Each structure stands twice: as C-alpha cells, then as structure tokens.
Image (cartoon, rainbow, N blue to C red; front, side, top):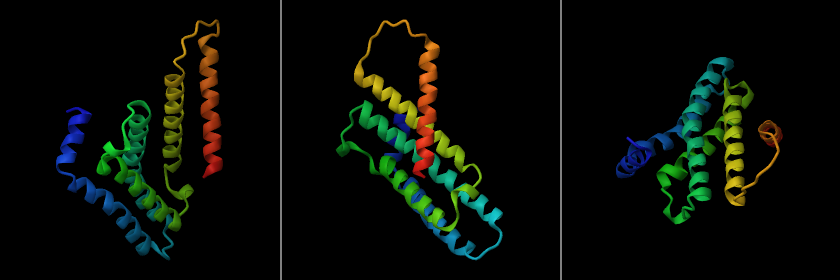
Length: 166
C-alpha cells in the first residue's frame, strides 16, 4: 500500500480518523480534570506522555507533509485535505495547550525528543528548500567536511533558537 492509497482510503471513510483527532483534546481535558489536585505527578506525566505521542506523531507528520506539499509540490491551499492535513495539526495544538496548562513539558518523559526531532525536520526541509530555490550548480574546492560542519552548525543554531522560543 502506498501513501497515496492510504490517503485515498482515509478520504473515502474519514470518520475513524476524525473521531480520533477530535477525541485526543477531549481526553487531555478529561485527564486534566481527573488529575487536578493529585500529588502523583509521575503517574500523570506518563499518561500525558502517551497523549503527547499519540497527537504529536501524526501532527508532526501532517506539518511536514503540508510543508512538502506547499513548498515543493506547489499544492494549492484549495486542494488541501482538511482531515489529513489540517485536523492533526489543530488537534495537536489544542491538546498541547491543554496539557501545558496542567503540567510543564519538562516533566513529561521524552518531550525533548519530539522537539529535537521537529528541529531536525525543520532544518532538513529548510536546507532542501534553499537548494531547491537557488538551483545552484557549483564547481568548488570546498571539501565536503566543511559543508557537513556548516549543516551541523545550522542544526545547532536552529535548536538554540527553538529552545529560546519555547
């Protein structure tokens, strides 16, 4: 099964995935209400970690897919699939806001891994977009190791900026 076939199958029957993405913020809110006043922070941090991963993995995939489709494939916004391209991002944003209002992200196990992964994806897409736009063909005597060091420094700069942003 290709990604196109999977998306076509979901588009033909969107209700299961729609219910999934609508249920995640509701579950986050319910967990927040149940955990309110509880002293067992470790237990609730694991529950929130499950919710974070359940919403962030498809949400990050949808963000990456949207960036790819809009920047590289030149897809029109009018052709976007609401269930597959926007609902995961909206659900992720709402769920993360609800979770952050109850517990700091530093307490949630593995949350730093998601932000690091998102930083890496953003850096790779940015570099790919840059090279796609400039259509650069250069014959140079710059060793590949210097280019690799420049890329690593770019990742470090993006990671630093990301940590200062949030």
